[in-house]
Length: 175
Image 1 (cartoon, rainbow, N blue to C red):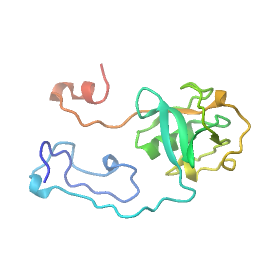
Image 2: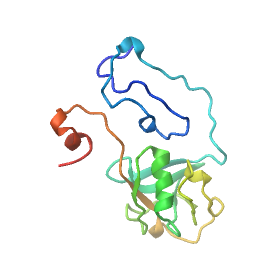
Image 3: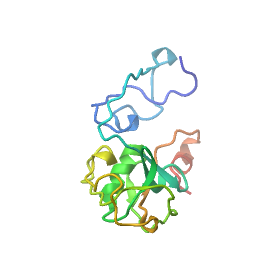
Image 4: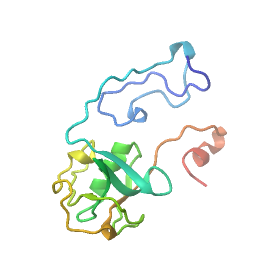
């Protein structure tokens, strides 16, 4: 059993949502239940598509902005050739970081030092993972780290304690 605030009740997911917050539910914090009704999940195995790649953003102000890096044997960067908002949208979705706000290139968040793994990435914007987008073969590129791709996402909903009147300001970054 959990303790503390109960945030979600009557959650209804279709199975295609990227995050729990994308599922239908009663408004956050509105409930008529106790911790006797807490839900849990048991995950077994993995069902990642091949080739599987883990994505992260580095050198940003938080986990939802920065230089794009993918794990393929070891971490490496993505070239900005053809990099656009549709590609960034896929990265933001994969990381659960909301919507893509920008897709800067030219190593805006610094140059990587590891391999350049991807070049010519071309997402439609609907893929669930960067690994599902078309690109040149792993490690084949025509760029330098001065062309490392980056992403700035809108961020995620943060659960926080605030007064009702100021909730927007402290939970969603208003001033």
